[in-house]
Structure formats: structure tokens, C-alpha cells
Image (tube, rainbow, N blue to C red):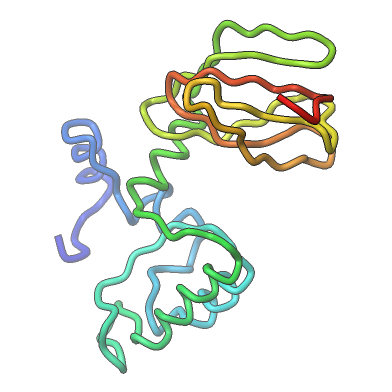
Length: 182
């Protein structure tokens, strides 16, 4: 709508078409006064991308130097991509970013079984991946295994020794706290 859209349009599009509004509170305005990825906002985006800050964003054109209004110059866009790559991060579509947030919020877990040294559970999401935290006392020998895909998973140990990792819809997971072998 060439920036003539408003919250009424956004609500209609979401409720009737399942669309997301890039300009709303779940979009680029999650942080006030930042705006889209463009030459006029580059000072903020350069710092944020160098630090690996995750934030939804859009731009219009990426291939002109200098950029047209509401766009970013090719050289600055390449720098933005390189900054995230140097932080070992992936750039994903706004839809995927939103799905991960919604799936993480809506994820449910069933068939939880646990002992002093292990946990087993089924994860259910809205279809995509979800980022979860399991409140256990993890150590260097902890193993997380996706029984459905047959793969060991990477995880982060948080300051309280709980672990955070990604789960998939309708997968079964095992956590073994003290095993060097699985």
C-alpha cells in the first residue's frame, strides 16, 4: 500500500489472510525510531549487526550505490550481511522469524519422563522449529538427542546450568545428564 497502511489494514490482513504487518509492533517497530534497513538508518544498523543483534527488518532495493530512498546501498548491505555472518548468524525471512517466535510461544510438551540423570519428552509446535529451555543441571557430559531424526543436538548451557536448544514439531527428545556415550 506504499506506506498508506495502518493498524486497521494490518488487523484485517492478519485475521482474514494470516498475513503479518512488517511495520507493527511485531515488525520493525519493536524498537521505536529505528526503521527499515536503509542508508538513513545505517549508523544504527551497522552497530547492531556488528554486535549480532537480532531484529526484524525490511528494505526496498539492495543493488544501487548510492541507494534510493527507503533502501540501502549495495556496499552497506554487503557489510550488514558480513557482520551477521561473522557472528555465525543466519538471515531469515520475516515469515520464518515470526514463525519461530510464535512456535516458541505456542510449543507444548507431552509424555515427560524424568529421573535424576535423564529426561524424555515429545515436542509439538505450530509446524516450525521452536527454541526451548529445559531447567536441568547440565554439565559438560550432557547429551541431547532427537530420537525422531536420530541426531545429537547442539545446545547452550545457560548461567543457571539449564540448557537451551531447538526442537521440531512432533519430535521426541532425550536428555542424558551424565553420559559420555549414548
